[in-house]
Image (cartoon, rainbow, N blue to C red):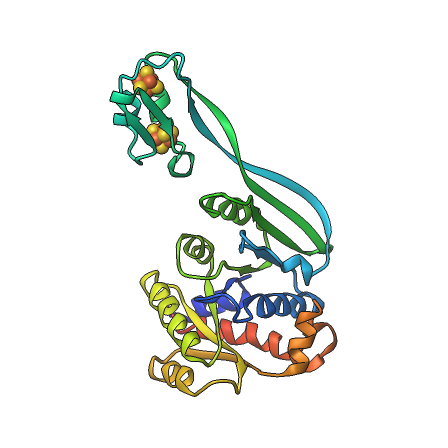
Length: 300
Ligand code: SF4
Ligand code: SF4
């Protein structure tokens, strides 16, 4: 990396995803305390809650709602009155989203599989297919102060995939702020969608065999995506040393450790922010941002 590239990273407002291979590692604890430390220190920062099936950032970060956008997509509907059961729509659909049983004179769109490409509507010569809006969820924006805020993606219950709602939330990022993306747990499509927007990923883990297993899976996925990442170990002192051995052997940056501590667990369970009143942790979360910028200088 050239000197000018390194200077660009120092000045750039980074997009940082906070992720974990599994739920329950304290991912939201880290992302909300990171956000709070940065904005209380005068940074402009946006936190995007992409855990769309169970968003809970606003339980910890209080803001004033400024707007709410519905997210929907068009889905085709087949009128059995007009349909002659020719099967053209079934042939046109590349996503196996149409069930067609000619002998039974049955044709139906499977909403969850539909990619809204419109091919079936074009393919039907009998005006049997119309389109209607299917509500998928909402994106709500909150202001925390005049330069920082929260964007919350929330998918409706029973929706096949929260990805369209997450994508919409990420389109709403405020320009010119540091962005923290609270990613969905796991390593499937919602995780990929969320971390894909990030310049850097913090993987939160705990020093247990389950924590290590999920950390390895998430790290493999990020390597395939060529995403720079480092690790925060939450609840350190619990479990064993295997996570630390893996971090060292794989030359991964250990960004921060949060001890296994009853007082911290109590603060979190009461929906309070450690960085609101604990100066030491506020400084540590600010140092985390500097460590990430330093770590990024290693990457081309
Ligand atoms: S293309 Fe139209 S008429 Fe033919 S099966 Fe599909 S909906 Fe029915
Ligand atoms: S809109 Fe596209 S994906 Fe959806 S049912 Fe029609 S052809 Fe299939």
